[in-house]
Structures are given as structure tokens and as C-alpha cells.
Amino acid sequence: MDYEEIKAKTDYIVNNPIRNFKLEELKGIIERYHKNHPKSKEVYERMCKIIPGGVEHNLAFNHPFPIASKKVYDCYMETVDDIVMTDYLMCGGPIILGHQYKPLIDKVVETIQEIGPCHGITHEYEYLAAEQLQKYFPSCEIIRWLQSGTEADMLAIRIARAFTNRKWIIKIGGSYHGWSDQLTYDMHVPGTKLLESHGIPKPVFKFTDSCPPNDIEELRRMFKEKRKIAAVIIEPMGGESGAMPTRPGFNKEVEELCHENRALMISDEVVCAFRLSMGGGQAYYGYTPDISVFGKIVGHGFPSAAAIGGRADVMAVCGAGVTGGKRAYSGGTLAANPLTCAAAYWAIKFVEETNATEIAGRAATRLSSGLNEVFAKYDLPWFSYNFGGTVHFQTSCVFGLNLNDPKQSGQIPIRKDFMGEMGAALVDQKLISVAGSRFYTCILHTDEIIDETIQKIDNICQKVE
Ligand SMILES: Cc1ncc(COP(=O)(O)O)c(C=O)c1O
Image (cartoon, rainbow, N blue to C red; front, side, top):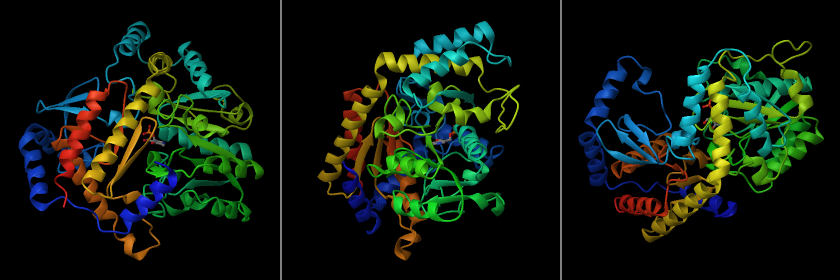
């Protein structure tokens, strides 16, 4: 589905009332959820006593309460209530070889047995993994390992400021770049600005701003203003991993505009690397960023995996250890630990050997075209598209709301609630999604599993008014 069609379909959904579940059907979905998951409910009740809000993982949506896992393998999750779910959460993107991919587990276990998870000095897996990453990201002449996407994005803007001697960072409205102080701004729904910035003093955002998605003229205008822009940071597929897709050509236009103005372009590849294409967003869309940010997928879900890479002259300002002179400080006791670096080295190797990116992409294409057939069959305005191994299916289009339109601006809670209900309807069909609106695929989502999933979505569509 091309950009214009996605835009037209989004416009239709946001300008019309949402298609809800029939009341009786929704009641049934929620009743079965309670009946089928009593142990998950017990876990949740216990969690509520000690964990803020009773849940620390937001991606799956948690209506009416979160599901707790017991065993996870291949493309399945077995819950504490012994229900086997087909998993399309894939830990929020990094799992593309399937859970517990044995050759990778064996290599990581071997590393732990030989040298433990972390010891604080250099290990050869650091450069081996960096070389492996660079093979697919030639724009990354120098690479530094970090511990999370949030941390890597945080360092990216610090490096950009130190290198350019400028202060302003421009992000694209609705995009997510982790939860560091300065980037917790205008997230999820474009134009929401400080809506989710509680606990962060306003002056922190003195030099952060956002540009509406795909609006190159507005970005040009921002460059023409007096302020000095250090960098523009983008999510290659568009905000929320492509829930608000990038207009064809936009990323390249950003690169050109940045370079005309001697600013840096930062490409946040946390979800795109090895999932959208082996070379991430920059290879897929054809542009060359100055700095690239990597997260969870570089270690295939092993904890403490992230990296930042870029032009050698730019990255020179982030030398750690004994480097003197002007430097963008970075640290992290557990960063570049052998466990993570071994996981990264082997994960990239296995993704390459198994052709995982292409296979997961094919599964995603089959799924999204099957979903579109089902939505058409029930005359629903819902729609689906995929970018590589990331499938979006839009039902309430919360991310597409235009906050300048008074009819749409009050709709965020209602449309978010519907996504929660959709999440519950998917669990009812033994499917785990990302936030009731996204599926990540892996090499183990076979045609048979995909077709079964399409039939389950058909079952869900039958429950809609
Ligand atoms: C595009 C993007 N950037 C940054 C992050 C933050 O990464 P982490 O959760 O590892 O801090 C995410 C997380 O999903 C992301 O999707």
C-alpha cells in the first residue's frame, strides 16, 4: 500500500466515528479474558502491591490486565495459565530469528561460561561486533557500544551539539527516541508537545523542538530562523515505527537540508536495523546520516545492547577513557560487555546466514495483504501495510489524529481505549500484538501460522458493529 493510499485511509478513519465492537461481543471478550487468565490476574494483583501501576511493560497493552509469561520459544509464548499464544510482539522488534534461537543461545552461554557477563576491560567481541555492524552500515566509520536505545539517542544529540557547537535539536512530531529528558517531547501523537513530559522542567526543552511529520517546508523554515540547529533526528519509517509513515523522499530531503545548513542528520535505527533491511532505514530509503543509533535488535533482545555509530570526525568527540580535549562525555559500567557484544556479533551473523530479514518481511507481506482482504470482506475501513518485518494494522488511527482540528483533538483517549480493546480481542484469539495495532514477524512465522492468524482476525472482525 503506497503512502498516498495510507494517508487517504487514515484521513477517512480519523474523520469518522470508530467502528466499535458489538457491546455483547466486547462483554464476552472481557469475560473470557478474566476466566482464561486467572493466574495472570493473580500475578498482576501481587505486582500492584510493589511495582508502580502493576506493570512495567507497556508495549503489549494491558487491558483489562497484563498477561504473565511462563515459557517463551520459537514464535510462541506460553502464559502462566498454560495458554499458548502466537507472539507478534517479538519483544518490541528485536526477535527476528524466533525466541530462544539455539545457535545464538549456545554462543552467549559459552561466553558467560568463559568470561562471565561483564568484567570491565576490553574484549575482542567489541571490535568483532562493531565490524559486523559496520558491514551493513558503512556510514558508521566509528562505533561505540551502549546499553539502551534511550542512552544511544541521548549520546547522539550530545555528540551533535559538541561537534557543531550548536544547541538546537529538531525531532519529528510523534517519533519516539527513548525517554531521556530532552527527547520526551512530542511523542506518539504529533503536536502533543509537552503532554507526556511530566517531571521534566520546561527549561530542559529550551533547545528542543519538533517539526510536523513529512513537512519539509516547515523544517526549511526552522533552519531559516535565527536559531542554530545542531541536528535533526528521525525515525526512518516514520513515527512509531511507521504508524505515521514517512513520505517517499522525505528522509533524503532531511539529509540534504541538514547538510546545506551544516547540521547533522541522526538516523534512529533502533527498530529498522536488520528488520526493515539489513542496512536499516538508510539503505532502504537511500540516504546517508552522520550519526546512526542502534538498540535492542543489535543484540537480538539480549539485555544491555545498543550502539551509536557515525562519521569518524563526528564520532571523534565521544572518545571515552584517556582521550583528551573536547569531548561529549559518555560512560556506562556495563556498556560494551562481552555478553552483549558476543550476542551482537553472532546475532548479525545468524540473521545474515538465515536470510531472516527477507523471510520475516515475506511473512509480514502475506499477513498484511491477508488482513486487507478480511477488512474488505467485512466492509471495514481498517487497513494494513508493512515495512519489511513490521506490520501495521490501523483501526482507530490514534497516531493520525490532527490536533489542530477541534473535532479530532479530544479523540485520543477514546481511540487509545479502542486499541486496548483490540489488544484484548487479539488475546482472546491467542495472539499477542504490539499495542493492538502492530505485528512484528520472525523467520518462524510460517505461511500456515500467518494464514491461521488471518483467520483469527476474521473472527475478530465478525464481532464489530
Ligand atoms: C525508534 C526508537 N528509538 C529509541 C527507542 C528506545 O530504546 P530502548 O527501549 O532500548 O531505550 C525505541 C524503543 O522502542 C525506539 O523504537
